Length: 539
Image 1 (cartoon, rainbow, N blue to C red):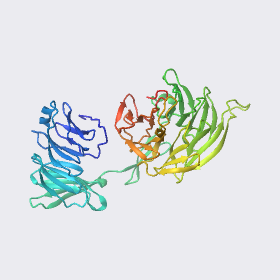
Image 2 (cartoon, rainbow, N blue to C red):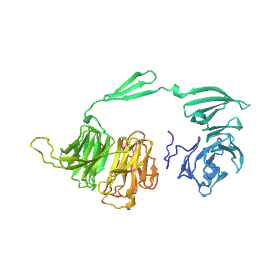
Image 3 (spheres, rainbow, N blue to C red):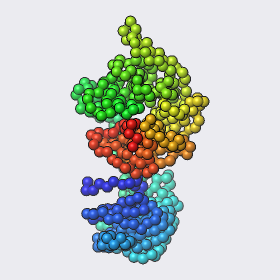
Image 4 (cartoon, rainbow, N blue to C red):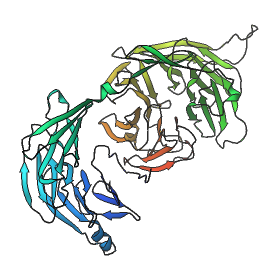
């Protein structure tokens, strides 16, 4: 790895530029940063840059960039000389050619090919002149490359193939006068290109048949790796049961701060719950479950807090007591919390939303371990479709709305006043949502009433989305890394910032009004799974 660049937005669908001496990326959409020894800022586009490429020559080094308004050729050496004068040094060679998704220089740098829609435009690199425009494809072009030994020959690839398997790119072998092209279905073809312009197939490869496929089967004692072609067991990775003292790191399953910000609850994957002071000084109080803890929640009066675990139990604890005041339920639990000014216990299990009345009595009967606290089912609501609930969110101190996320990737809005689903958002993410959180504010800050209509959702590989109950999805945040772990997100008490965990051992803080991150907190030693703001510090 020679250079690592941080981008202010997702660029996986853009053509970026790189050569032996320079590399370039768009900045703020319409500007460019060219990196070598010192970064060079190029400005001149009014629209968002969609493609860029360097020329084939080394003296001078040419860069071509395209947006919906202009296609500009830059002389990098000349731009560096004029950088102090703040004078644009680019030459506009094309205007209003549509959204250009691919650019390519010929090997003498005299011509530029620009792919826009189903047309490839051949432009002069020294002045504004369209040499020719080539059409013939039935679908959008994906790339175009000049032949290295004949600048009058150009190869284009498009999405107009049958079975919707588009050609992606082309590569020339000058020594043998062959060109290679590949497609998204794992097919690679090599053709010979003769002077009569007739292509002859040299060889074809099916990458899917060349690669070996394995399946991993998980069980309670380990992972089993099976060869799918022969159904042969290749290896077994056994889990090792070890006491907690042998682990230097324990995965966390969630954090929550007390409403006054003076204490922090931390649920761990080793079946324990730790209660810290917010200063993180001193030893924490330790409480235990039988299996990993999935969620923790404070009551508003800070006298009680609850924890839910994969041992299929919900436990309510009294402050200062080492024994739970309430142990209840016997099914898998999602997203347990206090609700309606601490009057109810709210949690989900399967496709159902449960609402329990409770009364905490910490005194003990004559029979040891006999709890005197009482719980009573007040209501059980079911989602409109038979889908398991993967996450839920509700505001304890106000708001009658409860938000539910299902394994079918939907979001359902429950109005608890009417006990009905008031609205449903299908296909909210490309994967099932694993975290949803509302803009709850805190007792230490105030916001405009309409701000409380905002909520966040997080899904693996699909980033974080912010929604408005009135206008659906508002913005998405994708600078952090979330490919396999359930990294959570949170809204600050002042409603101005968003935090998200990430798999690159960092926590990201976003301005709620911008998709680019403000801060990248890098002092973590492992994947950041859970984040929360201190309610006593609104900003």
